[in-house]
Image 1 (tube, rainbow over the protein chains, first blue to last red):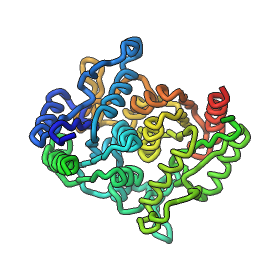
Image 2 (cartoon, helix red, strand yellow; image 1 turned 90 degrees about the vertical axis):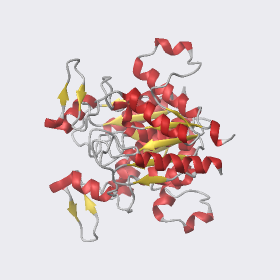
Image 3 (tube, one colour; image 1 turned 90 degrees about the horizontal axis):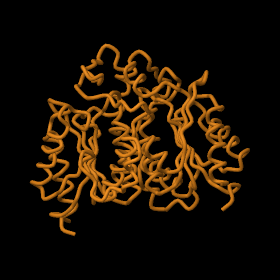
Image 4 (cartoon, chains in turn cyan, yellow; image 1 turned 60 degrees about the vertical axis):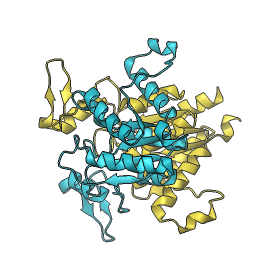
Length: 193
Length: 193
């Protein structure tokens, strides 16, 4: 398969932006410039099983997103921290899902601060440090401290899949396209190689 | 395969508790009472590839957890809200991973409040409601509102996998075993059926 025909699933909480269709179209236009077909959760699913019509909307969305991922060659995940130190859990579910299918998974984020710094900022006065330099939250749970961008399963899965992680600070956390574009470029290069 | 020999992967942020080995042993004892072999991220991996020795610890952990999941018949995930409205992202990665492999995934949590209530509590003064009853965060992103326990991908994946979700309030969010035990019972019944 040539890179020109590759379908790439665009995972991320971007679907929660106002006018999500416009935003999806802008990201798909970036993909097209790199010869990739961007597929988003807002796209219709070709050949959606008739039986799904009886399911509640949220179940159809979940099944459709899984089917979209299965129809793609790679996944690009927006891992920008979402209402806390970590990425959106729906997006992370899709990263794990794609990784198990054996496809390359790429991630990007518009916040460069590492996981530990973000977690300590979120914990605030609730964090305490022990004699070995380990950090603990108010619930008495250890803070992961491997110098990574987020939980080790995410970055470990991305690297093992043959993908890459692109993180950089952007002026607008949710509307920036420059970091996304660098990630799309990395995907195009990987799929062409 | 009889339920008596079924290996079940125990996903969750429990690995961040003090004395995580003791906690893993307590949960494995519950599994054993139901004829299941509980496998945790703390367990050694039989036949771990020699090449992994050169990798950094966090990459070995990620690869080992993925291999543990592949060696199991089902996954039980601790989806108790973790440092925010949602479950631990490492656990959610593993839920998506297991779902893509086609195995039944079960979830449990010791907090019964639904996703919307937890999200609004976390957003506090930052949340605003529109004329249609939709809630938005300070970043201008919509709050998911399907009456579910967490992001729809998690609950959608669990149901589609043939698993189940068990949530109930427990006095101790991280040390409770009663809700976990109800989930283990559901897994044993499903695997025996």
